[in-house]
Length: 333
Image 1: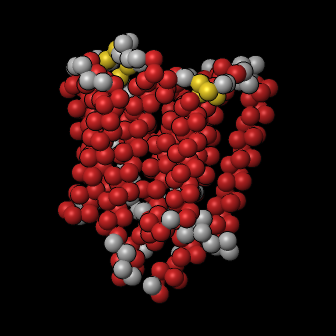
Image 2: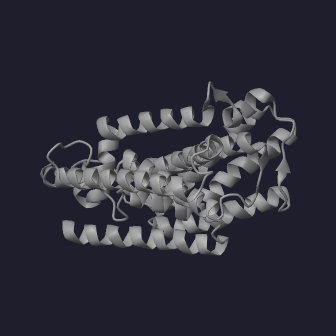
Image 3: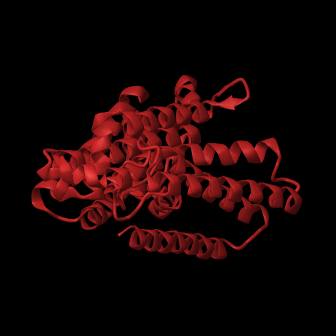
């Protein structure tokens, strides 16, 4: 594995203590933490409602579920892929589970079916990328439109009210353990599990190798097509999980839910250090990215900034993140 060995320090990120990229990621994560703390200080003076328990709870619950999506997107970006369908697939999970429940299916079984279908969507995309040879961008763009169309087809374009959901099911989206929302605990479990796997397991080390130099990884014996297929499938599966949590939280299924969500998720992952060129990224950085974007959104709302300006600001943040990623990628060549 001579080719990979030469590239490993620049790609493993989490595994090599002396890696320049690891040091760079640490600097970026430290910078993100400082920016987040700075925004907290500024907003605590700018709005009397910012540091209230209600606002902190709402903000943390929002970024917790988005954080599950960011985990899948980050791993996919590291492998060299991208998924534009995350918002539509998340809505698809909500709609399918809600539709099945209204037709007499147990909500837990309906949720399991919805997650499996989302996983199948990921496998479908993985097939077209690895077997047919299409680019992730085109395949996921097509699936984004297909999944959104399916949502509108099942619902007639109208939200599905799920007021009869049992309390034990709503608990996963609305319940608390002491003062801590159960959503936060679920999010923490996902972060710990996938951060450990990305750092320590052989399978996820191959994700870094594949994204850094797919040809070199393939010559070295890594089944790169399998890696890409699995990361694509995983991203959609996590969309299914997030969709079910959203459904339990809101007690409804919205066919238009998640419009533009893919931009937020990609921006959070890139802000956190995941490269659009593949081969680098970390779960911690991605989570800090989604926390930062959630903090910005909350701050803009509290400051009564126009919704139109909020879109402009979020788009500008995405463009800045991609520009920085492009600049750093050029420096690493």
